[in-house]
Length: 238
Image 1 (cartoon, helix red, strand yellow):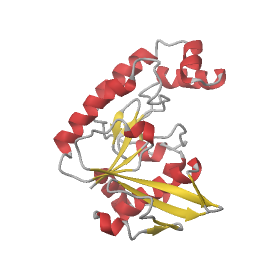
Image 2: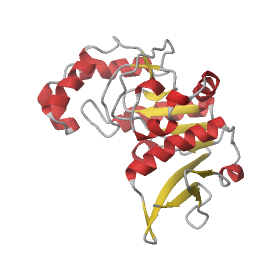
Image 3: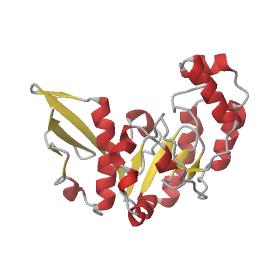
C-alpha cells in the first residue's frame, strides 16, 4: 500500500540531512534554473506574496542545494504536525520511506527521506510553466511503472490530487467536522488529520479497506453515509 500527502508551504529549522536523491531531481533543477532568473516583482505577482516573503523565496533559489535536508523533517504544515516525525522510531521512519509519498510542485514526488532544499512553488503557481502539465505524465508513468498493482491511499489536497493517475487503484480518505448538526470541512483540522491518519496506517500496517473503516482516531470515526467505494469519510463532532 502507498499513501499520498500534499507538501507544506512552511518549513522547520531542522538540521536533519539526507543523501537520498529525489527521483525527479533533474526536473527539479531545471525548474530552479528558471526560477533563479525571476525578479522580486514577478515572484510577488505570480505567487501573490509580500515583498519580504518574495525576497526569502528568491534567496531559496539563489542558494538552492546548499541544504540537503530530509523532506519529512523539513515540512512543517499541519499535516506534518499530525504525522509528528519527532516521536517516530527509526524503524517506523524507514517503513514510512517505503510507503509514503509527498507530492510537490518543485520535486514532483518525494519519499520522506529524500533530500530537499528550502523552496516555495505551489502546484497552482505558473511563474515558470503550467506545473500540472509538467508533472502529470511524469507522475503517471512513475506510478504505472512502480505501483500499478498497489492500493493508493490518497490523503492529499484536491489541488495536488489532480497529479495522480486515473488508471490506478486510488481510495481517498477525507475528514468532516460536525457543528450544530451540520457537516463542515475545516481546513486546519482536516490537514492535521491527514498526517495523523498517514502515520496510523503505516504504524499499524493497515492495508485493507475494511480495517480502515474500523479506525477511530482523535474522535473521528468512519461515516458510511458520507462515504463511497472510492472515498472514505471520517467525521467528528467539534
